[in-house]
Image (cartoon, rainbow, N blue to C red; front, side, top):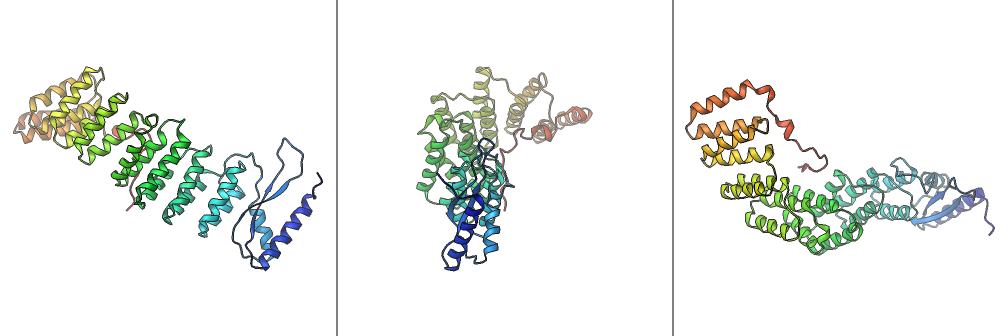
Length: 376
C-alpha cells in the first residue's frame, strides 16, 4: 500500500492541527513511532488522544508534537523520554484526565514510562480526590514491568484515606486481584500495611476481609501484618481469632508471628497470653530470638515475676548477646520491685560490657520500604 513520505505526512498533520486549533476545536496529541532496528519501514504517524489544546500558532503545535515523540515503541521504561515528559506536563497543568488517557495509550503501544512518572500521577490524582483516575493509574503500574515502591503504596494509602465508600474500596481490591492473582500477595500486603500506618485500620480490615474470599491471596505475611495492626490497636480478641483462622487456612505461625503476638500482648499487660504463646513457640521447635527474649523478660519484670525474668535473662545469655534494651528494662523492673542491690549489680555488668552490647541499630528493620511515615 502506498504511503506518504514522512516529511509530507508530518507537514499534513501540522497543517491539520493548526487549522483545527483556529476553529477552536480540540487539538490532538501526536505520537511519532520511529522504525525499530528490526524493520526498515518508514515511520508512521498516529493520533493518540484529544488533549484539549487551544494553540493556534503552527510553530507551537510543531514543538508540542516533537515533545511527544517516542524514540521507540520497544524502548525500556524511562522518566526522561519525551512521552513521559508530556504526561508530566499534562499532570502538572491539572489535565489529569488527559494525562491518564495518554498513559493508557502508551501502555497499549508498549511504550513505557518510568516509576517516577507513575508515582507523580498517583500523587496528583490522590490529591485531586479523583479515585477513579487513581485506580486506573495504579492498575497500569501493576500491568507494566515496574514494581511499585514505598512511594507508590504511600499514595495508595492517601487515596484510600479520602475514600469513604466501602464498595469502591472493594471494587478496587477486586480489580487488583484480577491482575495479581498469579503473583505472590506482596501488593495487597503492602497496601494493608500502608493503609494501617496512615491510621485507617478499619479500611485495612475491609481489604483483609475481602482477601479471605480469595485464600490464594493470603500468606503468613498478610496475617502477621494484620496481627500487628490489631495488637497495636488493643483488639486482643480479634487478634486471637485471626491467629486461629491463620492456622485453619494452613498458614502456620513463624518467628515473626510469635514476636508480634508476644510484643503486642506485653504492651497490653497480658502476661498469661505471653506465656502461652512462648510455650507454644518452643513446642513447635521455633527458637526464640533476641526480640522474643527481650519482650518476655520485660513482660515478666513488669508483672512482678522477677525470678522468671532473671531465669529468662540467663537463658538468653547462653545463645544471644544481651542488648541495651533488655538490660535497662530488667534493671528498671528490679528497682521497682525494691531489689536495688541486684539492680546495681546488673548496671555494673551492663557498663563493663557496653562495647559488646547490641544497640538500637541492630533492631532497625532490615527490609527497606516496609514502613511509611505519616506526614502531618
